[in-house]
Amino acid sequence: MRRLVIILLVTMPLCVFAQKQGVGLRIGNPLGLTYKRYLPNNRALEILFGTVPDGWYKNYYKNSFSDVSEYDSYSYHSHDVEGTIYFQGRYLFHYDITAKRMLGKLDCYWGAGALFKFARVKYFYFYPWELGPGGSSVLLDDLRTDIDIGPEAITGIEYTFDQTPVTLFGEVSGFLEFTDRPLSFKVLAAVGARFNF
Image (cartoon, rainbow, N blue to C red; front, side):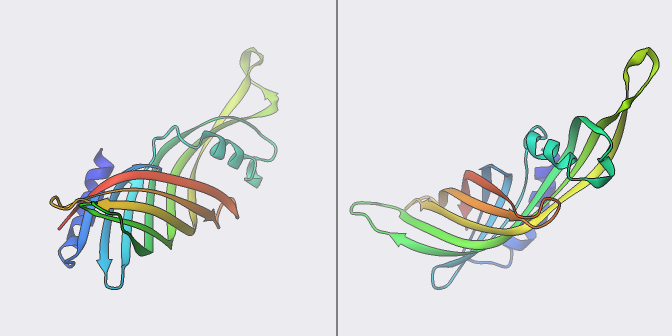
């Protein structure tokens, strides 16, 4: 919760300089705040700040252990994630979906952007041939910084109510990682709502 308050304080000054805009909550992967600025010609810019629960991506971090050369002689035991922060920037193209008797405005959109993820991961591991007192393995630990950067392709749909300045949205995106595990592909999905002003 503390992270979301900090993110809100960072995002709010951006809202002062725009006219057609919305700010809201994104629920999914990642969970966080979304700020969207609508531009002429059915274009939009979006900035997102978020996080994921520490228990997500267990297999990703477990598999990442074997990709670190300094752990080559050691065996993985477990890990703890001590916090994850996402930052996403996007450029979007909107298209109206017309339907008879629809009171609000329905759009589909697609676009491209970039994603930056920062996480602190504490690994616990052991040397399989070294035993401590009582014949058990000696457990070691190491705190590492995991940074993921790469392009993101997005598609989604949003509905804006006619009499209420609220937009509901749902989207799916694909992220191609360039760092740590190059060319690793992830699918992200979320729903959410924005208040427009």
